[in-house]
Amino acid sequence: MAHPTDDIIRAMQSPTAKDTEIIRDAYDFAEKAHGEEKRKSGEPYIIHPRAIALTLAKLGMDRDTITAGILHDTIEDTPVKLEEIEKRYGANVASMVEGVTKLSKLKYRGVERHVESMRRLLVATANDVRVIIIKLADRLHNMETLQYVSEEKRARIALETREVYVPIAERLGMGLIKAQLEDLAFKNLEPEKYKETAAFLEKEAERAKGALEETVKDLRKALAEAGIKNFRTESRIKNAHSFAAKLERKDNDIDKIYDIFAVRIIVPSSDDCYKTLGVVHSLWRPIPGRV
Ligand code: MN
Image 1 (cartoon, rainbow, N blue to C red):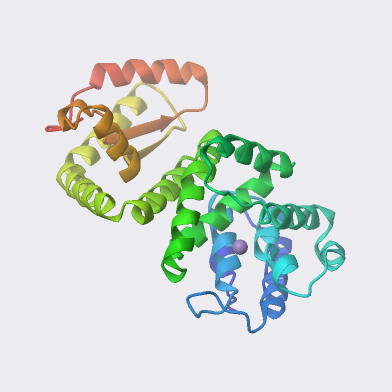
Image 2 (cartoon, rainbow, N blue to C red; image 1 turned 30 degrees about the horizontal axis):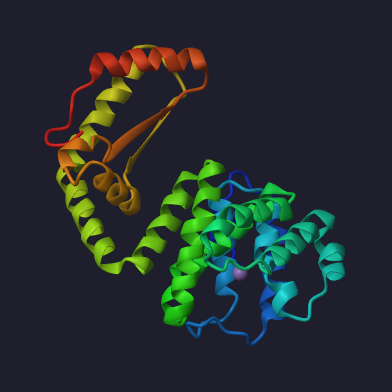
């Protein structure tokens, strides 16, 4: 039977029958607890914890973290008590839900010299790094649905995202979440500049697509020929905010930016890594135009 958590389970690395059972149960429990509560968009509240659980599953987080993500707003917004969560889902899940609830009480007031202490406070309050990861997934969905809140609140949340959450995501090495949060803050804080930058990058991506695919293909072939096994490649386009910031640093000279596109090669050992570097150097040729 289909269930609203099916795509969450599918996104997990190797879900067990127990994972499916507990995640479904937590979803039904949270949906019932949030009851008639609505998001600012008018949608049922449950779409928010659902989005967070999906992000967490895609990040490769474990069942307890995903369960805590589904339940993360129940203590604050519904009559559910922490003891009940502990009894149903265990102490691990309960302590994460408690951690996220505590974090939501911290508010950033937009004072520059408080930024660093806010970051430290956040990290100290969450003694479990998984709590911060849930909080980042929470912030991502709130940023994705920011158009529904008042203009004043929008600016405050976007600024807090840029000043506090983006650096935390970066320090945790969560590149994709960092880039998404950064661009959503950019979009809300500097809409005109964002639009212009995003349109430019989209055009660039379209133009270089073929060359980039060709490069990755050649690279994979050369690596296989060099005897490197079990490698994986990822390619990315620079996110809008980091591109705009770099352009400014380079006196608005686009020809001085060499990393609009990048390919990452992940290999199993450092020996393979040295070998890979050699292969890359022997192969290197720029994509016509840029990079
Ligand atoms: Mn939330």
